[in-house]
Image (cartoon, one colour):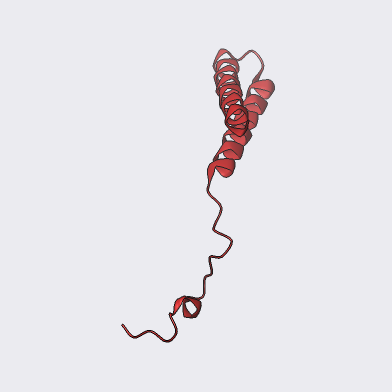
Length: 73
């Protein structure tokens, strides 16, 4: 289900991007074109955030926790 939502958001973002550029270059409605570009940027950033993998729950940033006790190497 999540893949479907991400795909629809990418298509909607592409449509908003194309429509916003069209409105800006034809000078028909500049304010609406800028708003469409901002909306497409928000959609693309949301997809980028959702696709970044989360760190593992047991991952730690302290290197002292990664030592193996009682083993010589």
